Length: 112
Image 1 (cartoon, rainbow, N blue to C red):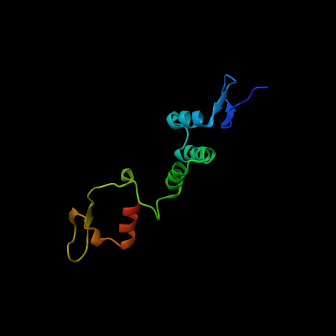
Image 2 (cartoon, one colour):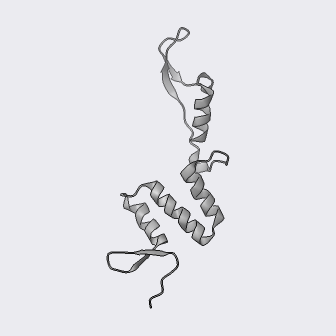
Image 3 (spheres, rainbow, N blue to C red):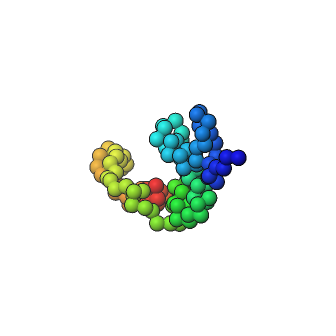
């Protein structure tokens, strides 16, 4: 009887076993799979490997970094430009001042 690796899950077109890791690698570069599907498979792999830091990272990528520190690659820096209209400065185009926007937008900009 053929024994397979415990993380093996399905066969490829040649009939050989494809491990979960190989599926993740193939699907992440394929382009026809959505990222959420690949990340859910990463979560399964992390659980099977009992790799808590990897699983925590995957969960944050899938569900958000609401109560956790954002990794550096999730922080974007830039300037906001727009056309602001109102009695005090009708039709002025300038860099947006974060104080001009509702607090919810500032928080959302900081989180996403």
